[in-house]
Image (cartoon, rainbow, N blue to C red; front, side):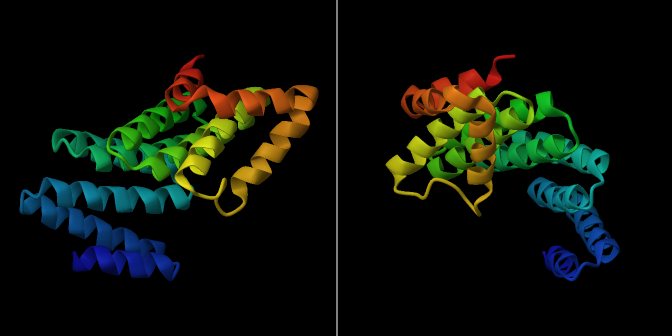
Length: 200
């Protein structure tokens, strides 16, 4: 655990190699201790570092390894978070189909375990992915569904301003169809939105 914390500090200081070494050593020790959860958490920390360093293939490999371990532990919350992070790495690597599948599944699991704010946040990521993929109307529908969900939870509609920027871009691209797409999303419900996101 101390090595994981050292990794966090080194990462925050911009010392990627030192952080990488600390996370790997932590994973090795957890492996020797047969602590499957500790190994999985160390792998996700390492994957986060690789993702944010632009080393997407390494990040994806670590997320996949960690995801299998969390699934074996039947830890639904960690599975959902790992899927979300894994999907983020795929999105940044240009692997849109994988990203969409992982993010949509993550949103469903977050909702099932009761973390509704996180489910809505991940749905926003799926909406942004749709816009990036050239489907602004779908992006607006999913963004509207996420906004309605956050409104019902008493949360602000976006985070850090990023989703608002993406939705404004979608509105410009969708033109006259923008308002109808957004309103459709606001009334479609969470499960319908996720199903809509998963349609090829």
